[in-house]
Image (tube, rainbow, N blue to C red; front, side, top):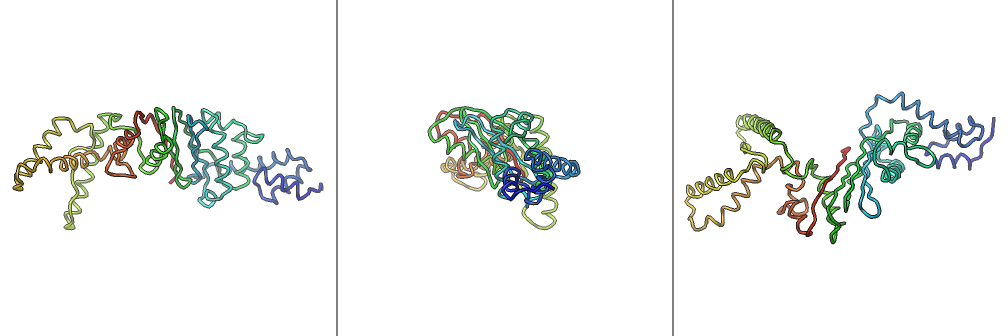
Length: 321
């Protein structure tokens, strides 16, 4: 049996992340041939991957990276089976290294075939499957290019990218704040203007049905009923709808005996409340129409406008949370 030195074992361990005993066994089997030992470990990973192919790999680390001139960003999720593995420092470090490689690719296929220290990314994943003993794979892969790209990572579980139309003063701050908003609030589109009318109609019907059902139970328990909105998106608030809402608000004020000379001070607040109550879909799914998380008195669109001549072009979000 060929003898291997502790230095050789440690070198293989440093390169592959495999355990000391696994490295020693691989080197012995390879008769001291370093490259052959790596191949043995990789084949071990492939066998484990085949056995665990049907396992759920819903845990992992989500990483966002932006290039040096902030014109391109990427998000990848390095998926595994357990949170125990996902929280390991070496696992998170590997996810960061892989994201750096991903930054120079334009598709998931290209990324998996890219070089990673003398092997492809796909081969590295197989190797790590053998090392860790869990199914390891790339889940999501998203890229974004724009004149300026900002990013944010939350707890290695959620990451976001945002593309801006220009690199304005303090673009880094704006990009980070918007990415944080996207990560935290889970927007799916930029504006209510992006919604299909049929989608809004179906969603309105469904949401009203849910609230009305809830109110039946709340009424039975003697609790306060939820407000049943007529609308859920700004797209439905036509000039006619808003005019009618204002007339209804005036009728309420008159019924309450409020002097007409103070209506102008009260009406704006009532109209803001009407719009808020009837745009719940926008607030949940539309980035620019959401309340800004750092200052809920302004919308995200208003916050962006405060930076001058710049627009949000697109965004990406990946979550394992």
